[in-house]
Amino acid sequence: MQQQENRITIEYCAKCKFMMRSAWVAQELLQTFEEELDEAALRPSTVPGIWRIYANGRQIWDRKTERGLPELKELKRRVRDIIAPGKHLGHAETVEPKPER
Image (cartoon, rainbow, N blue to C red; front, top):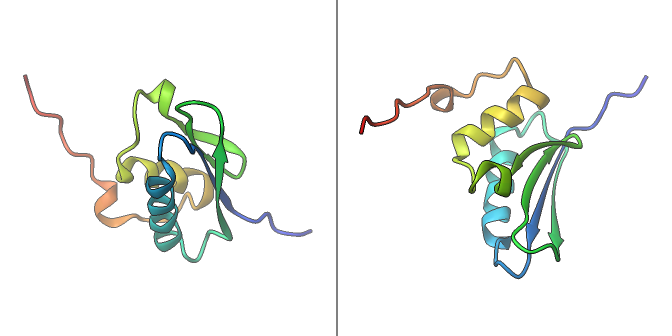
């Protein structure tokens, strides 16, 4: 039985100029999950405003439903939960308290 390859796909709106952000996120994920990830792909889209991330085909972030782009810590936790559930992320494991208003 062949082991599944771990893949991240970042789908982004080319007209919104999300390519640089997408490339940076891909680089960060490849660095963090260098032993677990087999591939990170950037997929330009003509859908206005789209910015979605998939881990092994499963959507883990959608800019529209999440109301914005993710903090890298949160994104790394979501990727880890699918690709490398036992991996410790160091400082990204801590959840910072939200300031009181």
